[in-house]
Length: 585
Image (cartoon, rainbow, N blue to C red; front, top):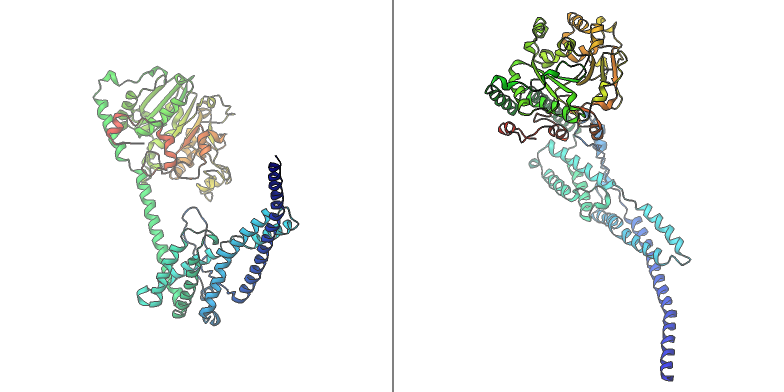
């Protein structure tokens, strides 16, 4: 028993001895580490004072941070500006090789090696000595050290400036003509590979900084070989003019091709129209009637109208309106088109019946009184805004639908996403037309009336306010009773006789319905999907009607892909005729 107690006492004494000796050993080790750290700081300061060198500052071209491509700034540098860009003096050019290497070693040690290692030790000390009297001092010194070595992008920017300047030299004279230029070309390729996608100085490797100094020396040699800055500036100006001319030519060609694509019927839609027309004429006469024809003159129903010669566009606007309606049985959709397109559009809705809703297809050639207005042929423009009868039918709505009191007009490039029954109960306050304004700051589009009309013309300047806001066609509620009361069709004809037919149907609408427009909440009608990539997606999803106004219609190959799904979801691309004509979502 005494033997066991003796062993216990020995074990306890051993543990007590270990608890006394261990802290002494630990503190001694830390003190040695602190002494070593202080010595390293002294050596580093002495090393920097001895071998500090200045790096080359290249300010040749200011970099731009932009999300999209922009036309180059048209800046012409004078000879004085160009010389100051490469201000190599004789002292810098004759630095000894040892001095350059020493400066490089000091810079790389400071950025990539010693300071990082030192910061790690400082962090370790702060954690392990937080309970000693020196803990607070070490923490303060660590914060000061981290502030001094804060990551910057200075050297990354200098490297990019070097590459820009090198490319300018290589453009002026081919590398094969000069050994120094060949060396510069090689260094440029190496620098581009070394820098890669570096965004801050800490991303640069030691080899990148070394090549940076080699590039500096090479640029200095090339500068001495090409001292005539006036000739160089002349060559740069010539190159600039050539590039600008190429940009203008490419833009002109791109604009022409976009307009051509917008005005040309795609092959697939032409095929669809031909296939549906053939199928329509294969039907017996009694099979060509659409259902619910007795509803087309009922004023208590919700009447919508679209003027179009595009089968696929009509299908999308009609399908979206009916599928979004809560009371589909109250929806009556009128489609007015030209005679050649009547069979195809009729056949589409015979094959794809509207359910409880009513669809009425009518040819404008069957409206006999419309033929007496021959102003469509008065201009020789090829622009459909000025020549298409369909664009001008909106000014004859009370005559086309004499039995109706209200009607909603759609352009064929819209999609209806919500039920529109609330629109029919809206108080128009005696106005003729309900429309969304287009003068809201920061929104698309932003138009004032003076953008489209010449207010120096006394016929316009005396009658209208130059600061008047415009509004959007595409989704408009018309009070046909108020229209008839004000006889606005006659007002429209007066403007035509005054020679204003050449301004287009949209400005004519602003003039005809001037001071007779009730502005709707913007959420009813969102525009810009046919020309702008900046339309807010949240606004699109909340909107009752979205409009692909502009050249990039959703059925064209040039359509904006980010918006196309809002349109294609209302078409069944598994349809036999769509597949036969290779029409896809």
